[in-house]
Amino acid sequence: MSLSELKAGMVVDKAFRIAEVDNRIYGSFIEHLGRAVYGGIYEPAHVTADPEGFREDVKQLVQELNVPIIRYPGGNFVSGYNWEDGVGPVDQRPKRLDLAWRTTEPNEVGTNEFMKWAREVGSEVMMAVNLGTRGVDAARNLLEYCNHPEGSYWSDLRRRHGYEQPHGVKTWCLGNEMDGPWQIGQKTPQEYGRLAYETGKAMRLVDPSIELVSCGSSSTGMPTFPEWEAITLDHTYEIADYVSLHQYYGNRDNDSANFLARTMDMEHFIHTVSSTCDYIKAKKRSKKTMMLSFDEWNVWYHSNDADAKLEPWSVGPPQLEDIYNFEDALLVGSMLITFLRNADRVKIACLAQLVNVIAPIMTENGGRAWKQTIFYPYLHASQYGRGVSLRPVVDSPKYDAQDYTDVPYLDSAVVYNEELEELTLFAVNRHLEEALELKCDVRGFEGYRIVEHIVLEHENLKAVNTAEEESVRPHTQGSSTWNGGYVNARLSKASWNVIRLRKV
Ligand code: AHR
Image (cartoon, rainbow, N blue to C red; front, top):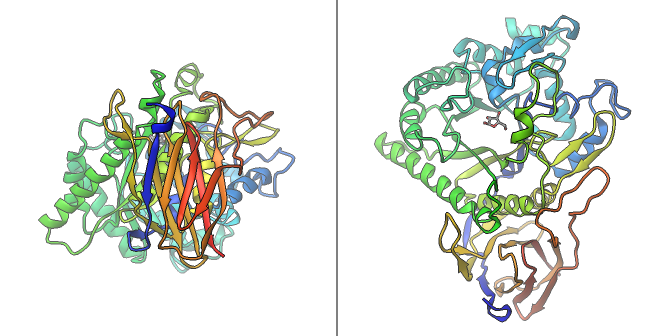
């Protein structure tokens, strides 16, 4: 395709409303894994450590991202975790073998410390319970410990531990990736469905105000997908509010056009799970529509070889430390766009994870904290993607990749913030060689003008950031002009764009 031919059109109108964006789609995840906790958010010897040992420099970066909800404490870790090990006097807490990641868990940080940290960074916590090695009893006790005000064994224990006020954890995951053979205490869908239902039932008796997430498939590649959803939801449909989805992508064969098309799979995943939920809804004659919690998503593959060489049983080893490049940031941008376009079903999403472990924020032990390439699309979406998601009617040239056909070069979502009178267009140009000329009809937005066109671009798709140099960072020199109700924008080859309009 020659330069002059790469043109796309888009119509945006207030009437094309998908749904109000649930801000929790900008959630993230901290697992007791690698250096996420020990050496990440928590490092008592660090020069910026607060009195509890948490790094202030990391807190500031998390606050900059404005993360509404953080999933904790796992992940695979939770399936072997005894939450009681992590509460009470720190010097009396046991060190345990964590079988999920084959490390030693010192239990210096547990439920109370994490809840306090999360409050300080302005995030709610989405707590996962262990349905691998444990079950109903441990889950209902943890909930009582966290949420019951006082006057019972577990709530009074919390108060004796120095936390008089209940934590008020609203959202609870019923286990983690219980379909996976790598999971400690893996279940068949029938086993999981029964256990999750009974656990959820007991938890609701402790605190009827909580929301519950039923475990979905670990990825679209699982042999039991989507039968897992159909069978498990048959048990949990009436007790759960959400079903979880997890998905990571990689570019192992270095086919960037194919890599940038991976959100075609993600879109398909969301639609398949939604349809399966709706089938169970119909089967049960239910009035409730099940919502989706995409509570693990990211790019993950760079660190696989290094992880295979790590010695077991250390505390806080450098596990899953993917160093992200520029093309990873483009795919992360597209994944965020995919959530916005599915805002009617996806109500929670957690970028996995937040610090050091497949993360936008990295730290040096005893040193600096710095931003990976993927920090930026996540930041922009969290900053400007709050409001109503509008469906852009797009006419874009397309390409065929190794695994996908008819991939639009233009990947886009639009958010209208009625209160602030702002309209934001998020767009990725997937073309690796050519700029895309976009003509966007926004005539329905009378009195609006372009205030900023943010761009993340780089000559080298493999460019990375380091603690020394942030080579991939956004600029605001994007080329967009206003022309009588139309935005004419030039989207550079392989770029992430945020075009911001406001009523003047
Ligand atoms: O986020 C890393 C791991 O990926 C999680 O522990 C697990 O749930 C998933 O397989």
